[in-house]
View 1 (cartoon, rainbow, N blue to C red):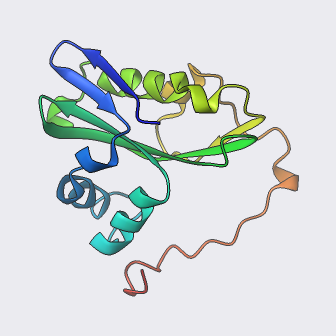
View 2: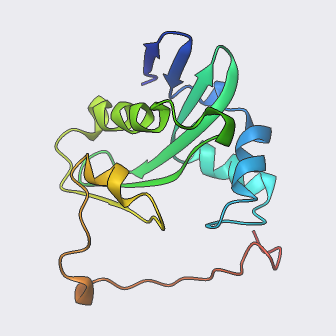
View 3: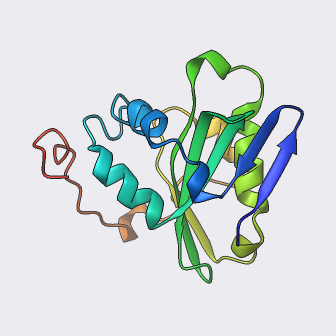
Length: 149
């Protein structure tokens, strides 16, 4: 189900056809979490998750995506607002829209990774992992630089 939220000239939409892959890829390839990611990998990620495009008019200025089974768990990732649009509360609004999506109500667990936006996510109930000794990961931070994805 496609959802949209509006605030003045801004829109948040889950319509995949409105994702500007060039903008999203351009930002992500320079980000600390997926530097060097290929355009085709971004395209596949959009196709296999629920994208949230933050638009000013028709221009992509921010993005987030959720990977979920829509029943028990969701992972929030690739969240950004372009630097020239930061400081206007748009990142907060983007996360409000994500959390308001009806497919996500009643999930048992949300997860995310962040280096520097803890205070943003705390507003929505995110906390540090309560029992980190139970969590495991298989992480390959160099996969994009090696050109494997």
